[in-house]
Image 1 (cartoon, rainbow, N blue to C red):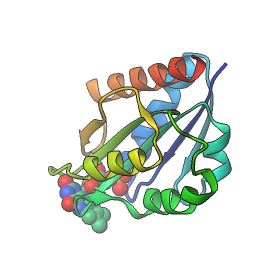
Image 2 (cartoon, rainbow, N blue to C red):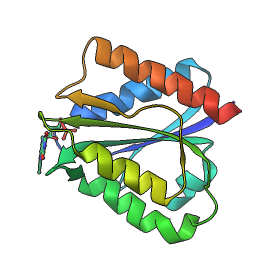
Image 3 (cartoon, helix red, strand yellow):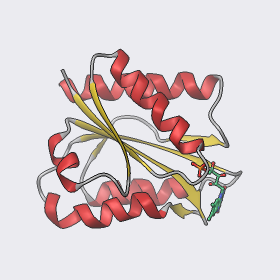
Length: 146
Ligand SMILES: Cc1cc2nc3c(=O)[nH]c(=O)nc-3n(C[C@H](O)[C@H](O)[C@H](O)COP(=O)(O)O)c2cc1C
């Protein structure tokens, strides 16, 4: 059974909804899920998980502060210990979506291994977005088992 960490930041709930859908998808594939905001999550959460989902809202075309805080606090404590760990990312935005680049770049700094294209969702996830988020969560759970 895989341990999946879902870490996200959200100001008005859209990315939180996306994170919950990813978590539900991972659980449906048999994973144990730790769901935390970027400010709650600790470097140990990243060390202990088998796979990680990273979620942010688009904040001035950049990653949101809560997730950036997690990356900043986790860099030295996890350096060299999470190389190749499977990750998937998701963002919500208001019509731009350029934050995708900073989220992927930060994950690359940790040498995490991307298992799927980053999901980019306008506003609150609904319908097909939720289906894709759940599928991504399940895929992450499977990647964490391998
Ligand atoms: C401080 C701030 C900056 C934002 N900057 C952008 C932006 O540059 N591009 C964009 O598409 N949306 C931008 N947005 C809109 C949010 O990314 C969008 O509404 C998102 O879905 C909010 O997610 P949340 O409900 O999880 O906070 C910004 C929102 C905030 C609060």
